[in-house]
Length: 100
Image 1 (cartoon, rainbow, N blue to C red):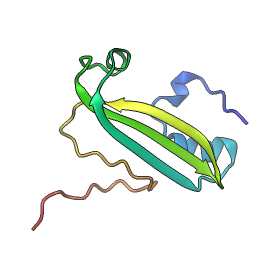
Image 2 (cartoon, one colour; image 1 turned 135 degrees about the vertical axis):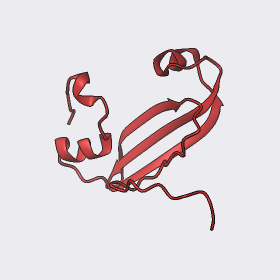
Image 3 (cartoon, helix red, strand yellow; image 1 turned 90 degrees about the vertical axis):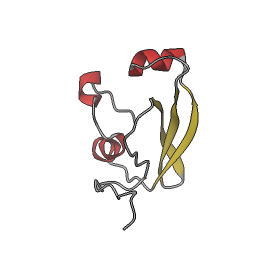
Image 4 (tube, rainbow, N blue to C red; image 1 turned 135 degrees about the horizontal axis):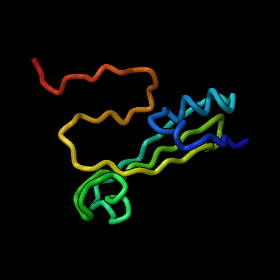
């Protein structure tokens, strides 16, 4: 099955939840692979940073049963924000990095 939605409906969507809803398939696994690397010229143009600036290259793999059904690749520019790259859906609380 494929899901053909206009690009404006995809902006800001949670793709894992969208696949469960639109394709009616259970998501049984999510893995995120992250690597620090200089951001390519093409990616920098899209995300609004300088080419070769250090960033994160993320590959998210979503599975249903024993099959990968979706792979998303994206870049995250330098940020001071705490990032959560967790497969847990529905959790929005950010744990504190400070002890005490």
